[in-house]
Length: 220
Image (tube, rainbow, N blue to C red):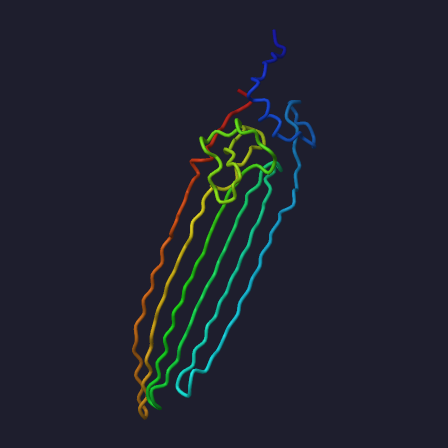
């Protein structure tokens, strides 16, 4: 004839329930769920450097080099502020160009460039997690050393570590070389040369399997 039935919570689930924030808004019409309002602060840090060196090797030769580095990190909390998405970027570019004048009619330029980009994304807990709460056999595999907490979706409630598809990290390397000759004679000019490019994702790691995904509905 109606009424409520209380079901005991399994002891192993109690630490997970402690990670669910308490509601701080209005209670919904059915009298059970309570809204959660959350506006945690995002943290972003970026450092950018560039330098250039020019050198005259002689009357017919000039060389210059440029280095650019860009390092950035960001931490974006989820609605459940016990979890956050972390992004790391390390971008570096080196380039060197040499211009040689053979004569009043012929000039050559050669350029070499190296591009190195390192990416690392992870979404995990920002609070202490007991080792037995991780689902992955080895959750401590990423460059940060943080444990990779599994993504948990909860029907009708705020989940845990649900943003993005992290963890993933890889390094992108690029190499380029080109040379160009310019020949000028009277009213005529001729340009010819060649180029080579190589790029590869080296040391690519996609360890999403080390985080795992769980979903459950507390409403049955």
